Image 1 (cartoon, rainbow, N blue to C red):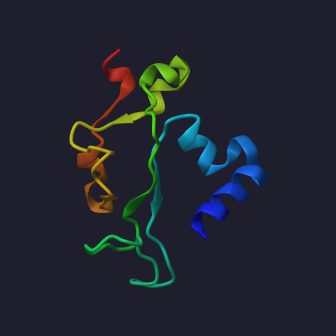
Image 2 (tube, rainbow, N blue to C red; image 1 turned 90 degrees about the vertical axis):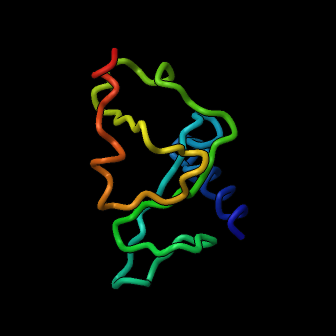
Length: 109
């Protein structure tokens, strides 16, 4: 069902679909754990605890984008993490966001 939903999203939304961003742009997509109350929403397949406001890896690209794939004008808005490994880390806990992302790309270029 997930695959058919993603294919439909690609057909309906074309370039704006999540699938296009992952497959053609090489960008990881994380989505927020949300819901009306704690426990309403959770990342399927993840065995650890999460809370509303955490982020879970939704889609994983097969090729990876690099900073050079983004226009230089956007670099000021791209946060960097020296601690996360997006290929392994399935959940980002909301109370650690400031520790995960300590710099923006323009700090280094």
